[in-house]
Image (cartoon, one colour):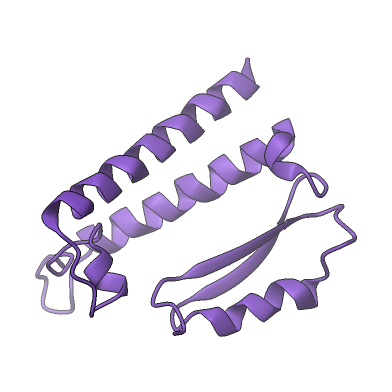
Length: 127
């Protein structure tokens, strides 16, 4: 502890029950990057169309940042490669974990399914 993954704390912009200070308290839970954001909607923003759209935009942005980082070059022009065991391994975040290859593949498939679902929701909102 703390977690070895980045954390983004979220709340609806009209949710008066969660202060910015409450959101910032999550920073102590990670050893990595932290940010907090207010998204469109109130306390039930994940069930509101504007909130769903905001979440889809955040996920898409995070995926693009990850892709750019993985494809970028270092100072000597060499392409950076995501270090083994890869971005989908629990061992990246919990080095003492005995994550199997099967768990790693399942995590990647779950992430890809989540991205596909967020894109589908975004397209439905635009109709």
